[in-house]
Image 1 (tube, rainbow, N blue to C red):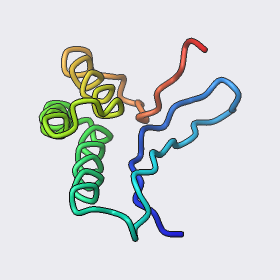
Image 2 (image 1 turned 60 degrees about the vertical axis):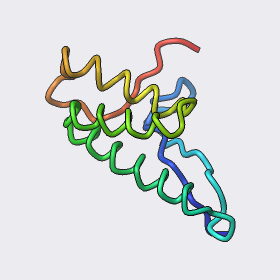
Image 3 (image 1 turned 30 degrees about the vertical axis):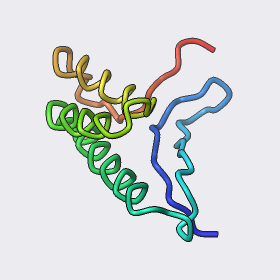
Image 4 (image 1 turned 90 degrees about the vertical axis):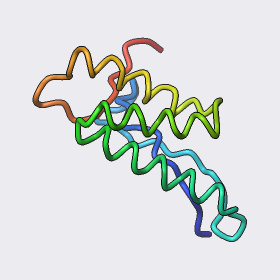
Length: 103
C-alpha cells in the first residue's frame, strides 16, 4: 500500500541506541485529497528548512501550515523549536535529532 506520510522528526527515544524517524500517516495515496497532499508537501518543505538551520524561514513556513491546520501538533512543535533556535541556535554539530529528556 502506498501512502502519504509526514516526517514528524528524528527523536532519540529512551529505548533505542540511535534516533528513530517518526512519521504520521496522513492517508493512503489512493485516498489522498489535494489538500492532504499539499499539506504533506508544505510540511516537507518547512521541515527541510528546519533541518538546514534556516529557522526564520522554517518558522514562517510552519506558521503558514498552522493557518490551515491550527491543531497540527508536529507543526506546532517545530514552529516553537524554530522560535527557540532563532534566539539560541543549536551547536554546529546539531543533527536535527530531538533528544527526549523525560518519559
